[in-house]
Structure formats: C-alpha cells, structure tokens
Image (cartoon, rainbow, N blue to C red; front, side, top):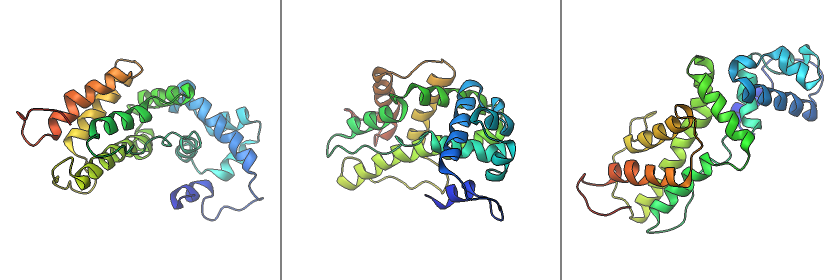
Length: 218
C-alpha cells in the first residue's frame, strides 16, 4: 500500500477499534456506487454509511472528509489499474500507443466505465473532485503514454525529446488525451478501436514527428 493511500485509510491521531477490512470494503463499494450513480454530489458520508449498513460514526472515524472517501473509493474501484504502458517491441510504437490507450479506456468492467464518465462530468463543477480525477486518472493516463514514448526513445524508435518542466506534459500526449476525454464527456460516446487508431494516427503521430512534413507513420 502506498504512503499516500495509507494516510487516507487512517488519519493521523484517529483512535478507536481495529478496522475491519470487510467493513471498509462495504463502505468503499457503497461510495463507488454512489459516485457512479450521480457523481460527486451524490456521495455523502451519511449516504455511504446507510448503503453499507454501518453507523455514520464508523465512516467518520475512517475518513475525515467526503473528498478522502471519494479518493479511496476510486482506488478501491481499480480506476487506475489499467493505466500502464504496454510494451511490444522495436518498430511497434504505434501498436504500443493504441494498446496503451485501449487498455486505459476500454475496460471490460462497464461499471468502471460508468464511474469514469460520471466523475468526469461532475468534475467540471467540483474543484475538489477535479483535483482527485487529475491526480488519480488523467495524470496517470499521461504517464502511461509518456512511458511508451520514453521506451521508444531508448530503443531508437523516436529521436531524443526535450524534457518538459516538472508537472507539465508533452503537447502531443496532452492533445491526444484531451480528445479522448472530449469523446467521453462532451460527445457521451464510448471509445472504439477505430477512434483510438484515429487519435494516434491524426494527433499523436504528426506531433511526434521531427518535421511536420515528414513522410510515414510511427
């Protein structure tokens, strides 16, 4: 368990009986369901307690705020489990980018896809939730794609790239991910294999080339 997650699971100075993992899982599952059904406004400590069948004090002892409960609920739902770089091999950069984006956006678990859609829609009006989504989903998706590109540079499939300032992402990656989010949020559509291929070929590939007029693909 990461140090950050550990801090979320038991606030410093909190006292009380030993935590029951099964009870924690029920509360987190309830919080995830509420988020998927109505986004951040649908989640409250009281509602999570009622749905999980526990007392309100049980929830308040474990999480100091709704934001902390939402943060751990996202981790419990495995929201970022698939946000990792796919490596195939030399000369297969396009395939790696398509596979990485496909794995990140086309989970076979439809409940997770519904959760992402609900949270992305709500995040526009909820600053606290927006920060959580950026930290746990959007930034993780950026890092997965950037890991693919870094590995491609190391094996010679891409020329060396200029390093970005800390906290900033390459334009090509940001543009591609912005379009993915637009597809899900504004158009309200599930991403298809064809959509991802188009984003890689029309957005990522041209921006990653040495020269705008360079022939050929990745």
